[in-house]
Length: 228
Image (cartoon, rainbow, N blue to C red; front, side, top):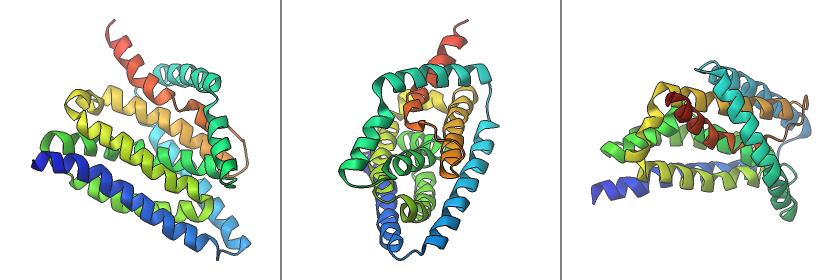
């Protein structure tokens, strides 16, 4: 019974933190002068690039990362994931919806705290890592939502679904905490975060959303390589 509560509570707390932070950010957004909004964009863009570099430096194999990005990018392009996100944004008149959803989903879901915290919660019932992460994500979502609006708020659903799935399947996904799996997955996410940073700073408009399948391809490639 207690374990079932943990299964439900940990991802729910994180999702609610993102949702609440987003609502605060959206409320603040209306009162931001253009010069303040611009400096915040620059701050987020530069910080995003800085974060991406720390993520990429964790890589174990650049060949795995390259293969994951190439295969995942082709799959995403064929599925036109970025186009689908833009359509959602257009339907609710939210021009930055795609960027907001992708950047917040990646920042909130790709990292050791998410994977290790969710698996720890599922295996031992200790949700302390996720609760700490929830506080950090809540604060981050205020800033992101003040810039990107509803796309950040919708990422709370990603947090609930993905983290909930990891918690429930923790006994089957514990291999993701191994260095070869975790480090390459974080590096793949880091390259996508870098693409977002370049887009925020208006240096290069990359269809980062189309690379999302690479996050599923990376563990698969690590497993295939380990067979040889």
